[in-house]
Image (cartoon, rainbow, N blue to C red; front, top):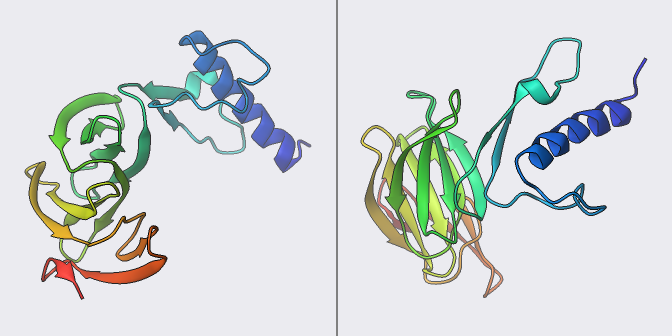
Amino acid sequence: MISENAACRSAADDVVEVARRRGAPDSPNVRRARVTGAIYNVGLLTRAMPGSADVSVFELEPAAHGVVVDPKSHLAFVTRSDANTVDVFGPKNMQLIKRIPVATDPDGIFYDPSNKLVYVASSDAMLATLIDPASQNSIGTISLGEKPEFGIYQNLADTNTVVVVDLTKRSVV
């Protein structure tokens, strides 16, 4: 019987092996290193650990921060802070569909089922961008007044405060 820790190490080894085959440096630090910009899709198996054949990769520009999946279209949205975009891609084929420009330094991202919107927090711009997942377009922004990190209860890192964002009114409450 394999222990949970050993199983996790085995899966991590497989992911590292895929990363090495795709050009990640072969060094003692490769286990700690993150292949910046790459998003891994690991197929989970019943009663077995995934191997390298179960791993697919979506690689583009560096600094992928957050990923969310639209439950209706099943498309994924990923924040790219160095590109100031949200990339839309198909998780099944790991192919880019569209690049949506957003405010500077997009980081946190989530899907709001009540309003059927993708919410993107952009730290340097001190605002949130709202994306309609059906049209894959930015449909508005909300000024947050400070640097957001993540969430509808938005923590503002530079002032050590928390604000509530009302997506229906598209403003800070």
